[in-house]
Length: 260
Image (cartoon, rainbow, N blue to C red; front, side, top):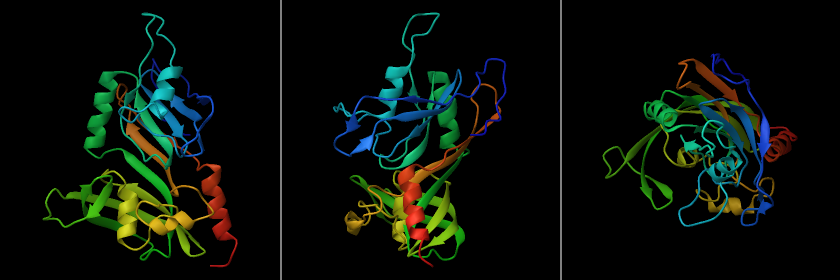
């Protein structure tokens, strides 16, 4: 992790683990989350795959927010338990960087950045096939239908624009490791856009039902690897990097063994 922020009230970067006992029985994934960075304004987590980013209404299924909130200590000045505030989300079965704010004011300042699309958000994904060209920009229009993004047109009713930049980092056996930078931030955007061009993400059963047969990874091969944003108080840039977890690395390694 690289952090460029310096300030009088800042704390040194801290990496630690916060854990809810047991494992998510429904998804079979760990509930442990790692704190990549924290200070008086923000907390950055490394969310494991399978863990919800935020709770589902009416459900007691653990989430990154609920686990983080339960771990926060009471404030010294007031004795009240501190709170965490949602800034953005990543898919349940994606892994990686997830940003929370410590106060409502910090949250509002950060959300304004996300609405303006100024933070740099980069993901690593393993997709089926060879992506051509090896670098470019994808623009699609989608209409949300239930929990899916349905491909639409610019003039389509309730259509939302989706844009991303990508580059192929490595050719694999029947697949490609790509780095993706989001321009917009629709739910499932990366998954829906690569499915739309015929390169669905490995393990993505939602946009390619045949992925239920995938044996090398138990979830969608998507990892939030890099985030840059402006600190809500100091105005300085903050840069966070997060290495992919073992299951993602294992997939890439397995697909790298055979000549491509």
